[in-house]
Length: 221
Image (cartoon, rainbow, N blue to C red):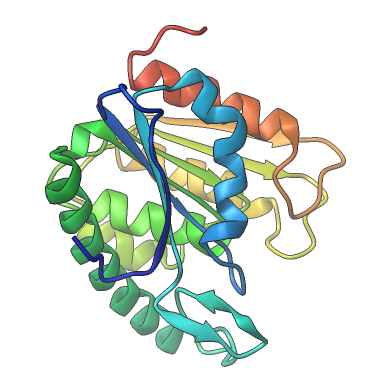
C-alpha cells in the first residue's frame, strides 16, 4: 500500500512477525529520516515492532528540505489551531492505512513525536475513538487546552519528557500539560531533564524505551 504520507519505514528483521508499531512524528522543519534515528537503539529491544516515520504533509517555509505539520509563520493562535486540526485529519487517515497494511489495532500502536510532532501525537492520540497503546512526547506542549478538553475521547497512557533549559518550547508547558491531563483522567508520566535544551538526549530516549516496552508488554532484553 502507498501511504498518504511519504515515510521512512524500518521493518523487523526477516522472520520476525510484526506485532506492534511505533509512529514517530518529526519536529518543525524536520523529516521522517531525522526522527527515525530513535529507532536505531529501540529496535534491538523490540524485534517485532515496525517503525514508521512520515514526513509532514506540508513543506516548511523556513527549511525548504524539511516539512511541517502546521504553519508557524503567523503568531495567531486561532490560525495555528485550525492548521493543526487539518494535520490531525491527515494523520488519522495515515494511521488507518498503517493499521490496514500491518493488520494492527490502536492498542498495538505507540504514537511518539518531538516538538511539533509531540503536539500532534497528543492531539491525534487523545481525540481518536479508540485509545492507543501509549503516547510518548518529547519537548512539546498541548496546542490549545480548551479545544482539546472539548474533543478528548480516550485516556491513552502518556509519557512527556522535556529539558529544563529548552529555549524553543518552554519546560513550563510540561507542567501545564501534566496538570491538564490529570484533570482529564489521563494517566500521565513526566520527566524533566536538567541542563537539557531542545533535543532528545540519551536519558530521554532510554526512559521512553522502557515506558514503551512496558506498554507493549515486552520483557527487557
